[in-house]
Amino acid sequence: MNAITVHGLKKSYKGREVLRGIDLSVSEGEIVGILGPNGAGKTTAVEMIGGLRTPDAGTMSVHGIDPASGDPGLRRVLGMQLQQAQLPDRITVEEALDLFASFYENPVPTDELLGRFGLEPHRGQFFEKLSGGQKQRLSVALALVGRPKVAILDELTTGLDAAARRDIWQYLEALSETGTTMLLVTHSMEEAQRLCDRIYLLNGGVIVAEGAPHEIAARSGGHTVSFEPDPAIDLDILRGIDGITSLTTEGEQVVVIGDADTPQDVLTVLIERGIRARRLRVTEPTLDDAYLRAMEN
Ligand SMILES: Nc1ncnc2c1ncn2[C@@H]1O[C@H](COP(=O)(O)OP(=O)(O)OP(=O)(O)O)[C@@H](O)[C@H]1O
Image (tube, rainbow, N blue to C red):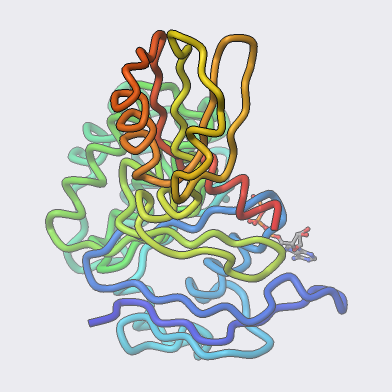
């Protein structure tokens, strides 16, 4: 069953259309990422799904609730972490967690969240005195305090050091095991690859690619094999190989780009002719490659 379904979602600001009719679905228990350049409309999209902005057109459903309807039931199923946490300067970490916990019937205990998000040493500190990373961790904890069925997390690990990022990823992976659905906005390919079952690439207010991170990476082609042939070869012997998109030389080195079969096919031709491939390197396409290609088109 879908936890989130969105059809034809549109939004304009002052006559400028920033979302041009996007469709998106997230199954229960899935972790789905939205990636795209600055200004692509990612935050606009997730804030509409979170009931914080009103769409101009389109339909949305979060566990059967229309987020645009103002139904208070939305807050019981959905937890939202915003890019910039808005809290009074003089509220302490513990008070903020307790306050948010008071909105829910069965909240995660404050002590548990303090421990999990490394905020124990800062429990009595005012919000205004927290570092960027501490504010970030608090905002993720606040989104999850009500044990939401669906968590929307916008740039959850931006600005965090490597250890804090890893801790949050581990926590979210454990949370996902318990069936929590997550919709993430991220600029981090590493985060998308590590956490997301599926991703949507958004550019200019439209979805330009969708799929599992490894599928999107593979679709971009870009399997590369490079080597120094010994003895030197006439490149024509490689030209007949299906799926090759580029065949170039850099000094002694031959660089062949193609599909997933290309590295094996190139090696087969070389072996058949008794040619050695010195300094052989094979590289798989990455999500970064796919992302950059999708954004060029
Ligand atoms: N309240 C608003 N009023 C006017 N324009 C807005 C408003 N909110 C966003 N925009 C504009 O809409 C476009 C999309 O913004 P949005 O924040 O959704 O993008 P984003 O993909 O989340 O970007 P980023 O990666 O920089 O966070 C941007 O050009 C932004 O300036």
